[in-house]
Length: 408
Picture 1 (tube, rainbow, N blue to C red):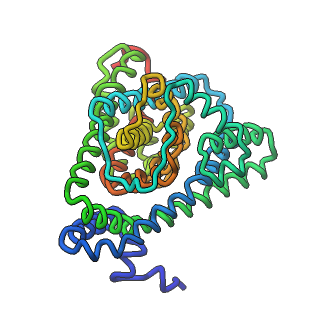
Picture 2: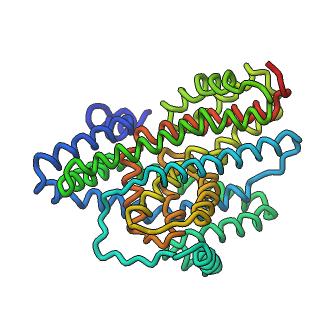
Picture 3: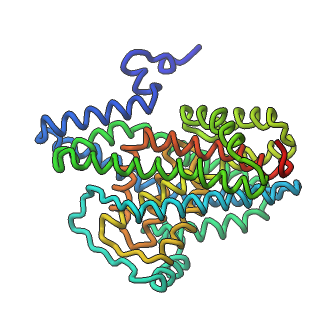
């Protein structure tokens, strides 16, 4: 017999099983209206936004730790000679996407409306201090790293333990996979409350700052989407051209049309794997290659996530008037590339890795999580475009690495 809760209809059914995107839009609109027409009432529901941000703060460190460790420990050596070039394209595409985001963020700096009360900053003055801070944070005790949300330490220990556990028993690696899936389930549960959190965050923001804050959200979204379009229509075609030595746009548009559009609406690279596999078959690619590269790309090929992490991190940097030099910006691109490769498969997973990049600039976890909250406000569009770029690029780079140069 089916449990009654699974057949819930009406308002309860919509809350439990309805479209998260629709619920976020409703929360966003309701927050704007309440903040504008009843600012005093909006201040009284600030707790909703605070609880949501606190929940994100609590789950993010363990998410990064377990997800990266499990991914590395369970990574299998690939026998196909084609996987090397595909992996290189995945990493190169993600790194160049982060560079595009750095350039756009400095060309069009965005300042956000954040709660900076009682905030003390100790930002690094140059690249030397950044590197020293990185080294210091990396060698801390792993428990201290988790407790203090020291993301560089968390990342370092996750990589080290993941590499060590690659040689462990299969049961140990299976346990890590189960832990990663369990933490991802908790993240999904937290994100399920995003509509209420966004309702509280937006209502308070509009009540305190008016519609100027919403204008900043719009500008931030324009920069994000603009970067992703630049990657999809300029950077990726250039990468493909260097491999195939022919006009890359027919292949680019095919991937965007047949993979990107579906991914835009599903907002899940994992859910789009069957679509990408079918597209690879229609393109006549080697099944032994794409049966490995497509699932792998859904995990580590994250150009859109690198853009999101970089743009929002630099928005926090500009908001706090932190001076970032060119070497530090390049290092941020590298950190964003590594962080993007560990992005969770759930909607909004890349946003939870923003504190890792903010850690480079001495930005506290409290402020970083406020930036994550801003990301969820614009996530209805940002996450859809990000997933479309990520997923369509899986097929694009697989084809670029396996098709014959000059093949029509």
